[in-house]
Amino acid sequence: MFHWEFVLSIIAVIVLSIGLIYTTKVSRRQKYQGEYDAQVSEKIQDHPILRNPVFLAYIIGIGLALAYMVYIAINSNS
Image (cartoon, rainbow, N blue to C red; front, side):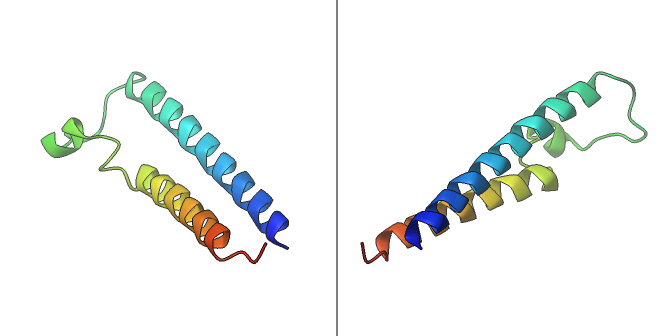
């Protein structure tokens, strides 16, 4: 059972990482396509990735998946 959980955890981290990279590329492309409707806050302009909830969801998801992998590795009976 341990091997399946480990394999599925690795697949989850890979999917989350690919989603994060793809979202980053799309957001950079969107920046240059036109004007924004409203003025963007200076705090968001200084840290566009850390202030974006989509990126935070990816980062938290990857962190939780890695934490689960470590938990399973520590508590395995093998």
